[in-house]
Image (tube, rainbow, N blue to C red; front, side, top):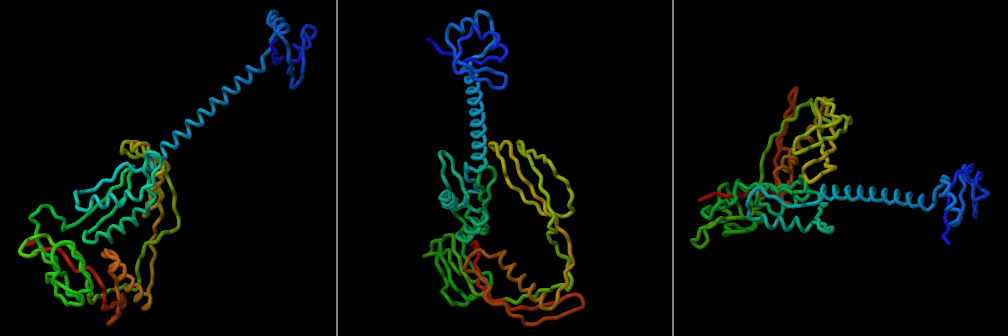
Length: 359
């Protein structure tokens, strides 16, 4: 005999209670819950008495729960796919066919973190660019950045070989005392602690009467005099501390924004990619920080320190090797007018002094 779990309105249950065989009766919120047999169920059906089977209610609730779980799971999978596509790496692109392309590609690939079928990279690409410039210092400039799922490597080299007839030497760009050198191709014409003049051949491309392209790095100790003028009053730009953020959308490389106010006359901008749908649709979070001009007055000591800072900063812009450094900055003399200070320095530094010169 089948047992049925019945749910019925309370007034209906009491109206037909004489014809209902019920067990485990429970009344809750105007509803009566009870168990019954085939005979009672047939009576209810034959007389078209309204009731519900509790099992069917549970079934509907279970289906609803399953539907919600499927929707949640689908949303999680969609977010995961978008996240993977935003931060994954699909390829490495170079701006030209350089000799070191394969080495750099292998170096970058070694930094990958693998998850299932995808590659990710968490390295600071600016720091990686600096490391590459140090490692391949014979090249003029190397930088890396990520856009979408591609890492772009930009290499500049005025001395890059374009064909097999590009023969020549590495010559000195200034007078110096040789500190160290590395020869990648050709023949060294110098030794450590040797004094060389501007134009002297440092690495020869003529090896045993066979012409080739000289390649290498030569470090030398140089002495230069430099005059720096510092105004007693200067207008400098500084972040005010005010900023605001807005969202930038890119659809097929057509940009439009939400929340952009154009409220600052002068500002710096930072951009962060937060969503990428297969490089078709991207969302960036943009932050604009206000820049304001302030008048700064300098004492003699402040101006002297600023002049020295400028020397070190200018040197850092051209530095390509860890070994390059300023060893000493000595003040030779100074002058002062109503509006400015003038400082004359003697600078001792270690720097790369070689450049390629074709035959």
